[in-house]
Length: 402
Image (cartoon, rainbow, N blue to C red; front, side, top):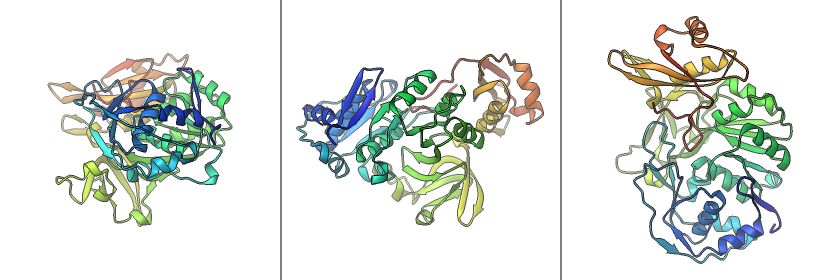
């Protein structure tokens, strides 16, 4: 195992084996309670050193500058990690690992996890021995940690894809033989928009945002041999549900732990991170994710929006995800972000940013005319702005802030 490749980051000029990684972890002599770093490999090494020494650690990104948490004093550690004992050292750790929420509409919150929730969906089997993971998330995010832990437990290579342009991503996919990718729908839509086909990718996992049927079909065109898996997870609860499309069926073992309350998904407190299970949390925690119930037996749902994303226009609730879905279905539009802007008369007006497909010259009047045939007037954006890319949160989701 020691000679197996562990981490490739061409942006930083890093290529490390598992033996290199163990040596780098063992060279660490102190870890902070809060760690912020642009250097992804250094952050991973520090995290593993903390886990192996049962020290608590919180992971942050440079872009979370509004955090109220300040980097703390260093805690001495002396890891003695053997490559062959890597996963057992991590899996048995008693450390608390702090992860920030995505902060799509406001300040991010710090959630503390133990390995029982961090590694809930991790699977160690011989079947995963030859997996090669593409890392599209920062490893300080919950989704990034899921990729990291899945790769570590099966001694798989990890290839950094975050921060790369679409063409560079495709080059890296070909060069390194990546088989597994976990990404947000926003990232996938961008990568799948240029017509390049990647036949060697076998698994695509997406989550964090609504993945509609249009995106799934687009992804399957780019990755024709890949199995598609849609994950419902949150920083507060970890991974909870999965599907091969946009419908989520609650499995029997979760039948009494997942329900819908007034159109919002609720999960039992036993599924939450330990730091969230405070006295103000009832038996069921309202996630803020709005769903439609497709069937009751077994409970099958479709996600429609985040409750905090709805736009109040003159007392009417407008779902921005519904409008975005329509916009990206129009010829000439690659991606869109719909949001509300304060207005003294209606409370809010609907606005949107549009990324045009390459070579397209679609104009606001064209979009307006097409939407008039599909939705009520109050749902049609009043302000259009054409942009080169959509603003994203540190976790790769569309930012919902004005």
